[in-house]
Length: 403
Image 1 (cartoon, rainbow, N blue to C red):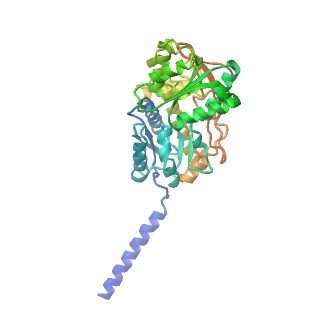
Image 2 (cartoon, one colour):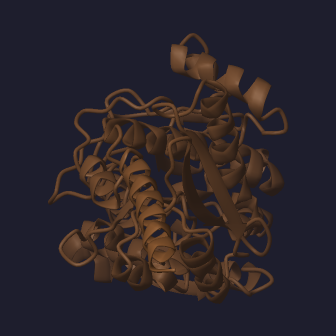
Image 3 (cartoon, rainbow, N blue to C red):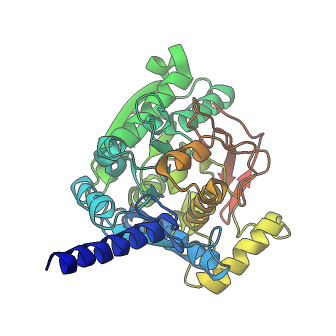
C-alpha cells in the first residue's frame, strides 16, 4: 500500500511539473490578449438622442475588419466589442463595467461623448484600463497627472472655442454674441474656451446665453430667445440633432447672424442635409479632417485608400458624413499604437506608446497637422483650420492654427 501510494504521488508530481513547465513556455499576457487576439471595447450611442454618432463605432469596426483580413496587428486579430449606451451616462457605466469585468478587454478606444465618458472616468482610471482616442474634446481628457490612463482624440473644445474667438475678434470686433450650448461639461467647455479667447471683452461681447438638455425635444424656443437679444453672431455648441434644428430655425425666422458651428456637428450628411443645404450657407466651423467628398482631395493617396476601404468594408457608409472619417482615424490610431507595442501588450505599455507619438501624419488629417504626445502632453490634436460652407461643401480658408 505504501509503495503504491508513493508511486502514485511520484506520477502526480511528474504530471504537475510537466504541466507547469509547459505553461512556462507560453507567453503570458494581461487580460484581453492571447497569441492570436487583442480584445478591445467601446461604448457608442447606436440609439437615443445622439444616435447619429453611431457611425463612429460602425466605421471603426469596419476598419478593424480590414486590418484583420490583412493578418491583424503583429499577427493578432483585433476583436472589437462595441456596446450601445444610448448617450445615457447610467447606461455607459453599466456597459463599461461589462466590458472591463465580463468581457475583460485590454483597453477602451473610441468611446463616444463627454457626459458618457465623464461617468466612467474615475472607474476606468482606478482600474488602470487604457482609455484612449476618446471621441470627445473635453479638456479633462488631457490630465496625465490625475488621470494617467485617459487620452482624448478630438481637438479640445476649449482650444476650438478659442479659435472661434480669435476669428470673431479679427473679423467682427464689435460683435454682439449669443451662445447656444448643451448643458453639460461638453457645452460648458466651449463656453469657457470662448470667454478665455475673448479675454476682457467677453463680458461686453457675449450678450445672451441659452442652454438645452439632451432630453429636450427641440431648441426652437432657445433660438427665438437668442434672436430677440439683438445678437448678430451665434456660436452654436450643440450635438447633431439640435444643430440641425438650430440651423433650420435660424434661417426660417429670418435671423442672419454670423453663425459658428462646433465641429462635432459639421457633418454635411448627418447635420447640414437634414437642416437644409441652402439654409446652411455661410456657416463657419473648424476641423482637422479631410472631407473625402471634396474634389480637392481626390488625388491624395490616403483619400483614395479611404474610399477603397469604404467601398469594400463599409458600403452603407455615407461619404458625406465626416463622422465616418473620425471613426476611421481613431481605429487607425489604435492599430498604430498596438503595432508599436510589439509583443509587450501590457496596459502600461499601451499608455507608454500612446504618450510617445512623434510627428505622426495620420491618414485623413489635414496637411500641416501632426500627432504629438508625451508623458506631460495628452492632447493629440492641437490645431485645426477654419472652414465656410458654400452650399455644397466646406471650403477651407486661412492657415492651420491652434489656440
